[in-house]
Amino acid sequence: MIPVAILLLVLLALMGAPLFAIILGAAALGFYTLGIEMSVLHIDIYQLSNSVVLMALPLFTFAGFLLSESKTADRMLRLSQAAFGWMPGGMAFVSLIACAFFTALTGGSGVTIVALGALLLPALVKGNYPEKFSLGLVTSSGSLGLLLVPSVPLLIYGIIAQQMSQQLDMPTVEIVDLYLAGLVPALLMVVLMYGYCVWATRGTEVPRQSFDFRELVDALWEARWELPLPLVVLGGIFSGFLVISEAAAVTALYVLVAEVFLYREISLRKLPGIMRDSMIMVGGILLILAVALAFTDYLVYAGVPEKLFTLIQTHVESKITFLILLNILLLLLGALLDIFAALVIMVPLILPVALRYGIDPVHLGIIFVANMQIGYITPPVGMNLFIASYRFKKKVTELFAATLPFMMVLIIALLMITYIPQLSLWLVR
Image (cartoon, rainbow, N blue to C red; front, side):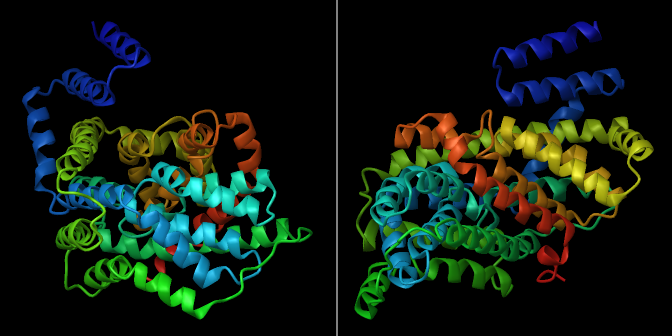
């Protein structure tokens, strides 16, 4: 009977059944094989509601949807151009900064390509940058802000890790620590990408935009209501004045007032639709998270992490070798799975094993999300490749060829993040 049930789950997954149903079915089947009553599933699913940081997820998501529906992208681009357009490779740096901050604010790399792509690509081509280079830069930059506050993937990793700390001998992973740990790696990625941009266009006559103080002042004034937002979030969280859930509430309220009443770019009539769309996304994430926690409990009851560690240790003794294999695995997963699906499926398996190799759980979270960033532009199903293909009317193969050099730069950054833990942990410790 059990082999038949396993085969049925595999067939349902191949036929496109919802991910939460497959995970829940696997958890129920697992508990059944262990002789544990199915009622434990209700308890495991309900325990998600005990997470004190859970309410931050819908609030940050709602704020991100509001920003993506307004003209924030235009203001971020104008400000970036006014501030950095005078630099060597200025327009390339503008693209990196604008994409990183917009992705951080909205929480969606695909949204960044759609919102900023139509502005950045023509500007880059007009600035005498090669079209292939410009396509690769815009497509690759879309996911740069996923390590910056208020990163939803880091938030979800933190929620899963906090729930697992109840069953594992490990310190509680604080969301604030994850946000602090992501700052230097995100900066490293931007700096390396900018260095490559300057090197790659060294033989190209790229005109620089002369610095105009008046334009900078005007751009700052135009973005006056959005510029304080990162300071409010970062200052509130890192000073200890606000916990994550309170910072999320302040962020959502601030963005709502700014976009609806100050900029007046979102009408009250559109608000219910934006709320609905954002909560549909949150509902899907919460449902997957809840059943993933039930599946995690099954893995712990069954001793799967211990067995997996024993199996790996027989072939892999070195921590460095384990990290190499971990990066390869996560890059492959990033190319095949959505980042949220990868988090809920793999973190319960990887985290206990990584702890045995002496890897800090905060460092592991940064490694995980950094890999997923690269996965967005990795074939066969890198999401940003398909979004850019639709946005720019280009073939996916053409976009992959354009993004390949940028992917190599990001992999170099990933190796540095992986093997120099201090890059992630020195602000935390």
